[in-house]
Amino acid sequence: MVYRDRIRMLHVLKRKRNIALEILSALVILVISQACSKDDDLPLEMADGNRITLSNNEIVYYSNESDFLHSYMSIFPCKYSFISNNNGPYLQDESYSIEGYDDRFIGYWEKAKFGDWIKKYGLEPNKVFYCATIKYVSYMPIPLSGEEYIPVMPLDNMGYSPWTSNRSFDIDYSNQYPKYIFYTCFRYIGYNDKLAGVYIDLPLTNKLIWNFTVKK
Image 1 (cartoon, one colour):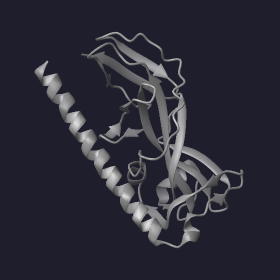
Image 2 (image 1 turned 180 degrees about the vertical axis):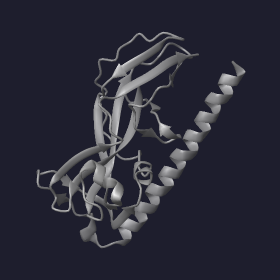
Image 3 (image 1 turned 90 degrees about the vertical axis):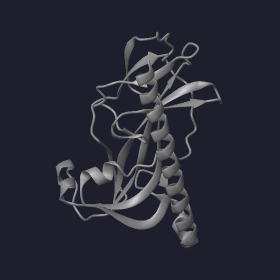
Image 4 (image 1 turned 180 degrees about the horizontal axis):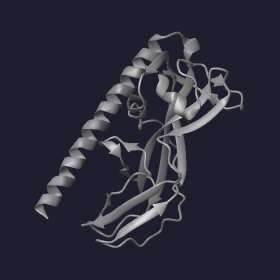
């Protein structure tokens, strides 16, 4: 029990540290973007009619896939619906798997170029693409008193979360509803240099599977 509590505390500390770093990075991006001309803040209308706003006007070059996958930003405005069929009950020390998601959000758009690794996804290296972070969310009921949700392996069908460099999901609590929020982040290649849709989530997965247990 003491060992598990220590591991849980380490996860909490890592999560708080990485979230603090993301907030700092977001503030830096905000300062840089405000220093640019006002035209950079204007929405761009893509070929499908969607309008996006770039976080800054720089072109980021990703020479390898790992750098691209781990450059996500999980902190951006999300209007949670809190509508879900995940009603439980979820019992202590039992393991569960939930497929799919309740909401998806896209934020932190940027212009990017890629190295030769992008060819395996049918795209051209050294071309400009409009990319973002895509955040998948599942809403969960509050467990019984004193219990917590804990992600468990395997998590190969997930994206990434702020407290780990491995594929996983993070868990937030919202006082607004209240609900627990499972979320995982993918990188999203949305559009090419012609503003035409590409619509690729990376890392690739056939479906989201949230594996978790409930612990006291």
